[in-house]
Image (cartoon, rainbow, N blue to C red; front, side, top):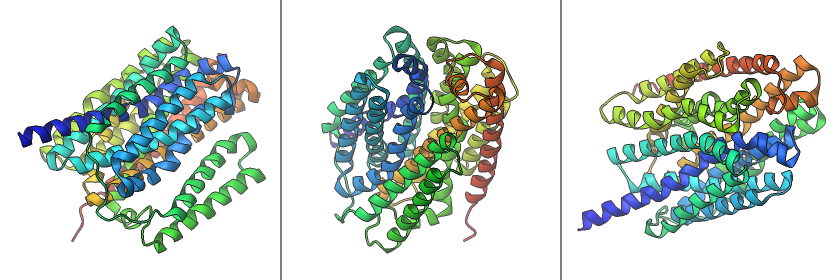
Length: 471
C-alpha cells in the first residue's frame, strides 16, 4: 500500500509539473505566430511589437536563477505555486490589453511567473525521482516541452484565425489553473538548512542581466555605438562583475560558482544555448517567413510548423532510452547539436515553400537535446542544490533566448534595410506584414548561415568539454 501511495504521489507530482512546463514553450512559440495579428490589431510594428517577445524573455531570464535558489530556501512547491499564479495573471492581463505597452507589461509579468515554474519544477522532479526513473521523468519533460513547441504554433494559428490573438493567452491561463489545482498533491521540499537570501546577489544579477538585454534590443534602433547603448552595456558589465564578486564573498550565494567551474556541468549548461541558436530562432521567425515570403495564413503557418516541432515529440524518449542502455551522453549531446547546425545550414540553401527535410533534422536534434540535457545536468549536483542548478541551466536557456532572438531579429531587419533602404518598410517586411519575398529570403538565408556556423562551433566545444576526466 505504501509503495502504491508513493507511486501515485509521484505520478501526480509529475503531472502537475508537466502541465506547468507545457505553457512555457507555448508562450514563446505561440506568441510568435500571433505577432502579425497583434501588430494589425494594435496598429504597431518594429520595436514595440518585438517587445511582446522580448519582455517575456527578459524577465524570464533575469528571474530564473533567483527563483531556483529561492526554491531551495523557502520550498520548491511554494515557488512553483507563486510562479504559476503570476504566470496565469500575466496571461489574463495580456488577453485584456488594449495598448501595445500594456501587452508588453503583461508579457513581462508572465516571464517572472515562467521563471518560477521552470526553475522550481525541474528541482521538484530532481528531488522526487532518482536513477533511471529520473532519466525517464526528464525525458518526459523534454517530450512535454516538444508538445508545447509543437502545439504552440499550430493551436495559436487556429486560435488567431478563429477567435483572435487574445484567445492564445486565455488558453495559457486555463492550463496553469489546472496545474495549480493539482498542487496540493505535490510534496514540499527544500534544502536541509534554511539560509539567508543573498539579497545583494539577487539585485545585481537581475538588474545586470535586464540591462544587458535592453542594450542588445536597443542596439539596432539607436545604433550600437550610440551613447545610450554604450552606457547600458557598460552598466551591465559593472553589475554582472559586481555579482561575481558578491557571490565569491557571500556565505550563502544565489549562485555557487563551483557549479560553473565544473566543465562537464558547464558544457551541459551550454546545451540550451546551442538549442536556442538552432531551434528557438526558427520557432520565432519561420512563421513570419512563411507569411511574408510564401503568403501563408496564420493557420497554414501553424500547420507547417508541425514539420519542425513534431520530431521534438518523439526524440526525447528515444534519448532517455538510449542513455539507460549505455549510450554515451557525450555522443548523444554532440549529435543533437550537430543535427541542429546541419538543419539550419540546409534551410539556408533552399527556397522551397515547405523545406520539410531540414526542418525535420533540426527538430530531431532539438528533441534529443531536450530529452537528455537537463536530466544529465541535474544528476551532477547534490539534491540540496537542485533548485540552484536548475535555475542556472534555465537561465542559460532563457537568457540566451532573450539575447539571441533580439540579435537575430535585429540582424534580419538590418539586412532587409540594407537592401530596401527604408527603415519603416524594412520593419514591415521583417514582421511579415509587407510582401518583399526576394529581400526577406536573402536576409533570412544569410542569418541562417551564421546560426549554422555558430551552432556547429558550439558542438565542437561541448564535445571537448564533455571528455572523460583523466583522473
